[in-house]
Image 1 (cartoon, rainbow, N blue to C red):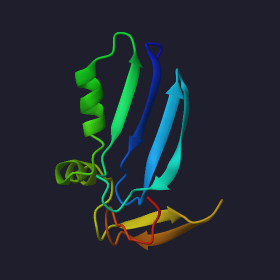
Image 2: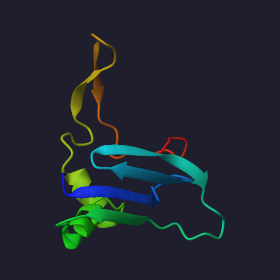
Image 3: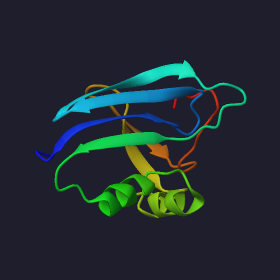
Image 4: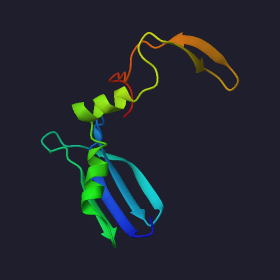
Length: 114
C-alpha cells in the first residue's frame, strides 16, 4: 500500500535450489531466482520493510502463513475444491474441455520447477 515505501529480501522457496531475490519500491515489484544456495549455507529468508505505520506482527503473521510447514500445507489442502477420486472437467486447450479424475492433491515431483 501507500505506507510501504520499500522492501527487499532473499527468500528460501521450498523445492528451489536457488535463492529468490526481490526488491520493491511502492507498488513496483521485481523478483527472480538468483544464485544457488551454498552447500553449507543456511537456507533462510531475510526481509526488510521500510515505510510508515507498518504493523510488524501483521507482516510476520502474513509471511508465516506462507511457510511450507505441515500445518500450513494441511490448511491449504483442506481448502482445495475437489477430493481425490472425484470426477472433474478440465480445460485442456483454448476451447477444449476433457473429463478427468482427481488422482492426488498437492502433488509434487522433483522435476517440477518451484
